[in-house]
Length: 111
Image (cartoon, rainbow, N blue to C red; front, top):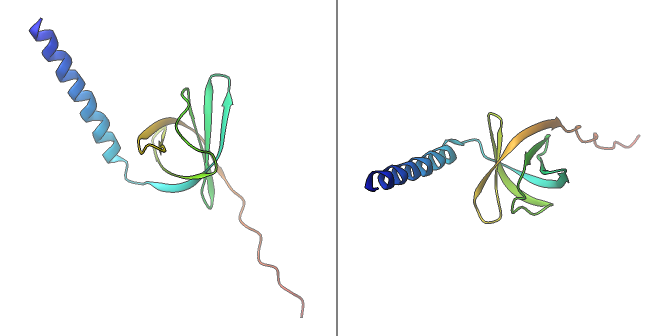
């Protein structure tokens, strides 16, 4: 009985350490606006817009995020990580990236 408790405790510590290490390895954090939260079937889609791109992540869980707010996010492999309103890093599946059109050129008056 004592050995199974030790293995369980060691497993929990190892998993916690792995999650903490993974969060520290994410270095390229950016800021964007959470422009859309949409539910399709059993999945939630989260769209984050920057000046030039729009990133979409999907998750089976509803995350503690507020639409039309600034969020901190990072992309690593097939995962899009978002910091929720409680300050916790949440993992979503990196679904897609769209290149946003450039802004129109400034209007010039004819002289």
